[in-house]
Image (tube, rainbow, N blue to C red):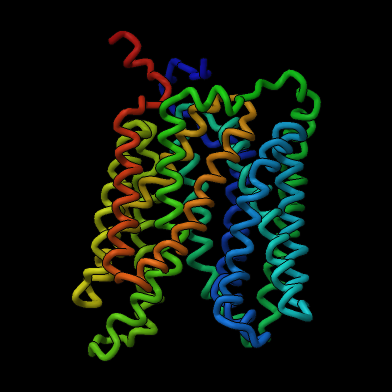
Length: 414
């Protein structure tokens, strides 16, 4: 049977452990760097004189190799421990970024980005596994929210910094990101030295959460469904189809900003709704449970996303983007906390976490492809409508799943 802990809640909730704060700071550095290069990479790739499809392949290669190497990252995390895999992952991405800055050909650029995807899944899976193992059960929602906030704030600040760095040339942002990742790897390696030594000493005694026992838990299967839906909509369609729709559907509409600028504003508005909810409500899953935020978030984001393609005016698109962002802000921290509940405190759940991450990445890869096909053969309305329906299915999966939040002391006598 799956391990699920119970605890007697103390009068005061514990603070976030210092070792987890180290990963939160590192997440902020990583997100700023990713934000620096994300808007620049497509133009950088196109300068090699390749087609739009080839440019998209550079972006897709990163996600594809994340997906392919997720199982390996889970096994390595369980065998070697989280910290070594995390540091190695950061260094792999750093090397790929520096190599990208000096790529002499499109083919090598594609290879460098693919290698970066391997490092990305290494540090992503190991970080989630570390958070699941080290976060006190009483504040898992708060920890997940803090980690998500660091990524979100960094992702918002990154593009601004990237635009400023462009005055020094297109290679500089990649070099800055690579250097930042090296600093983050060194920071984690030094600050988590004691934790790394303890883990190495206790490696044989450390409990492990297996994928087989997690699969027996209905909540884990529901989490995989909702992860796929969120990956499809948030990490896939949101970043690929929304900009195309915003840039093409309102040409000549007389709005205060042109259609090209509207695409960026729509994504920024989504981010604002996301950040606002994560900063204010994410930690509430420690009181409300994990199911309500996930179900409400998926439902709200699903309806808002489903209606995007029917937006009659630009301001409606922005309002729906804000609502969808707010709904997504409820989903991610609660899902991560639910996975941590399933893994259990003190246990290494590398394969459990990597399968969750792989499912989300799969949604992020398939979403843009199938939504793009719907746009080409039917309409944007169909593409967004199907995406919204998939999110609703993700919410429905949780209606039959039990709550994962460990029992609280004030409920034990009920």
